[in-house]
Image (tube, helix red, strand yellow):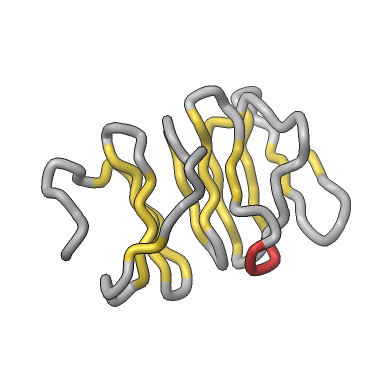
Length: 116
């Protein structure tokens, strides 16, 4: 696995379609194609990550509780402005879900943002 250091073993991972996403113990997210043939570049602000999810595209939670997406790529829209206090995320193809610390779930996408 060229480009992967053994010191960066994943502490959490997610798989979706032909992509995989791993979270290292140092808060770095690593995205690669299923065949390990090519590592994909994530935006520079994808740092200090505590949780990851992937469907058609990756999604992540930063230590400050904010949510990162690649915004508009493959149909996953950027997280709603003001979305904070998130502890984990998941994606069902192009529909992202964020679990807030208070137990509510926020989802967004082609329709209006919803909170459950």
